[in-house]
Image (cartoon, rainbow, N blue to C red):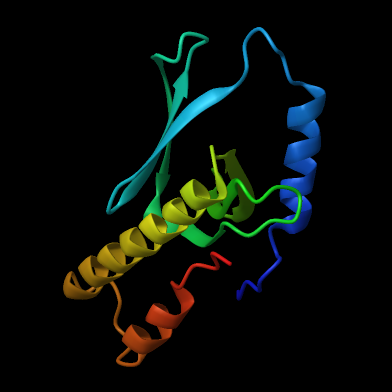
Length: 147
């Protein structure tokens, strides 16, 4: 499956609509996104800006696409995640965070690209990627679309 520029625009617009309709001025939804070499952690924050117990974890190897280029808001960073169901089928889910600035969204896209590279190189050295041409192809596929 190949993802093209703009493929996250429609899901991000839907997420944005849900966010603006459900916006609560007293307790805005705050989170901290931490991109690590093999995992992405989405820490949920309480109304005081402190981390709660709840955290979403995403495996970098299952992130199919990311971008920091959206018409609805330049401050949005989004990624497409391959969620594996109980019956081993999968679905592609779009996740997004609103950053403080367009620059911060682009920094997240670049950090994700670096995480992709580290994960890919680790998988290749572990023998989990076997095609001889996969190095060049994966490097091209792992490029993030950050505008």
